[in-house]
Image 1 (cartoon, rainbow, N blue to C red):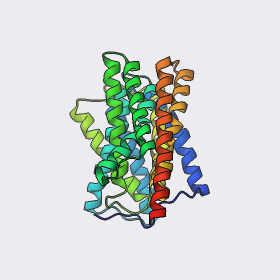
Image 2 (cartoon, helix red, strand yellow):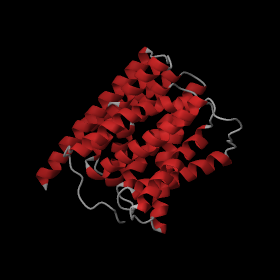
Image 3 (cartoon, rainbow, N blue to C red):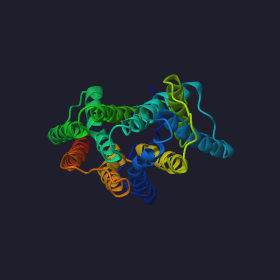
Image 4 (cartoon, one colour):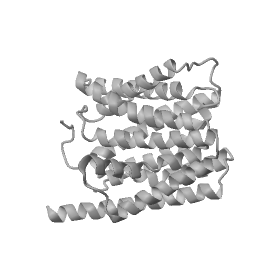
Length: 306
């Protein structure tokens, strides 16, 4: 199995890395709110698929004009795998889940990404989590339970289950993106958005989704925001971080986006912020913090042993 990475990710916080981190923190914290605005007049999977298709087309045309080449057939397949998991399984899952739960609760579910990433890494490499990471996994699972309880019975429970599956899908896509043969540089992001967007759109059509009415102005503005900022800017910034800095730094957005999403949901949409919501946020953020510290200690130990 080959990889496109030419250098080992580091923890160096260059100005570009900091700019990418801030972009991901702020933009992805607000995309949950934007998704909520689209769902009144747009079906979730078609909205998600066309969003990434539009972003992928714009980025691909720009890159081709600057001399980049399209992915090979093998790379297109790998782009479809990663894009299907990240854009379809995760972002499409978020849109479906937000039909049943608040945007704030959805963000708490996605914040469990580092928990699932650690578990997947252990299964793949047989290097099991250290004590701090185990604490983090345990707290993360507590947060998942609180999320499910806060969702209530019926649709809320369905939405909570969907959002956890979405988090697992994003974790798997992030892990695979670091090991599969993908195009070099930003063409990988364009390929993933094009392939993933196509898959999500097809699934939406097969599921019977259609634009049976014209989206309202709020939905169109929100969709445009998701294309430009959520897809082109933040997604490209995140994929750059995955290939430039350690995964623990790239996924540190999970410490910030839940708070941003919960606050925006409560402020603009008047979403309920219950005691269980606060406890779930606290449990997940503390879990992620334990996992980050555990990874840092593991990296230091591996470097010392090496």
